[in-house]
Length: 521
Image (cartoon, rainbow, N blue to C red; front, side, top):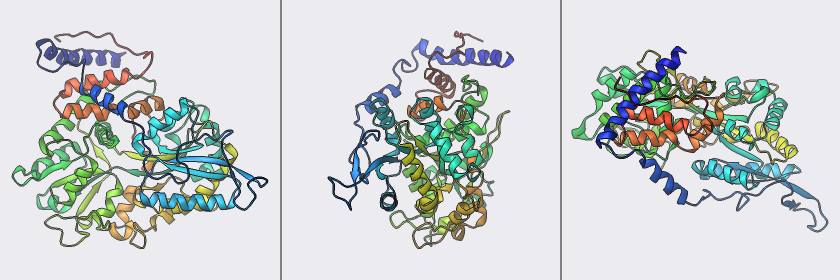
């Protein structure tokens, strides 16, 4: 009761701060915020599948669906193989090549014919929802953790099938934390863990040493470093992070900042808890650090990386996919900073932070990890899917992990014979074909840092409120909100109210609605 009372008082005060400018006409009408234009524009865009389909020109359902004639038999009288369709949220050329190889290998030795489609990650949730409505779901979907439980509760995924596959492969061979994040009702699993990575704050350790700055692992140190490094006259910023409203990474950066200050989005009981002083402090810190110490304009993951490679910023936030580029191993993306005397200069002069801490009374150590899962859909051919995943997690697993291994820490650590086999083998994978390993480039300490506790990530609302979290991500709720705040449409106080109201608006028949009115208190 005390929490609810404090919550209500704070809400009244912030609602007053939000409403007064509207009454005097000082800000645009909140009835038509920029997100409406964003949503309208997105709705007009056709769904386009990225990358060349490995076998299929379009998704097709499996039950009662197409059969592929055995190439070695007469099409009229020969045997036929049932089709298994899979969607994979990776679209690079290297991933397309390995998918082709793995699918061909499976098809040559099994009674099912796999057809795979590479799908742009941004379009994946929309395509899955559309396929669910039209009963054209594939059998398997590789996807990020934020969608697993939402799709399971929506009847898109077959949780019994996923649980059975995990049992067959050996539950003890998977990371316990990866299983807990997708824990469904009655001990069932929403999806099968695949791999994951931790979000990194990457900073110029040489610049920090020259300015006697502490590693940027808490609000105070981050702010101090940004203030000390920024040089407007020489176009050097304190930091650069993605802020574009249509990027998932914009949400991911803010979520870690919020969690570090003890800002939780929703309780295990389903009450939206974004409206708290801890979240207000996180929003204010985020607004100040970016608006005062970052380049003008909307930023993306690419612009952040380019700024770091060219020596125009002190630190960035991103995924480990950046690590090979810092080491000069990407022939297309090379460092060009004034000090970069060797291709791997930035690899040798960068520091890495995976855990940050806020500044408020509820501040805590927070990491952010993105995990990938295989989801078995309600339309799946279960026998075929079980055979494919048996093949995938044994014969194909390391080959898949070998493409961009820096961001694919295995969530199946080993097999029934050796419980650490895949993890140890992953550490020995070259970052690029024929090249060095991460450990050779960065040392054992960094590989330990980025690969340990990946599945122990702080994530808003998982697993208890997974259905809501899927909707929040699908709608880019916080990517849009924080971009609007950075653009000056809302201040921090207005944004914490907007965030609360937008999340509540996503919950049908929300049971914790509060009666609030504008007050002068």
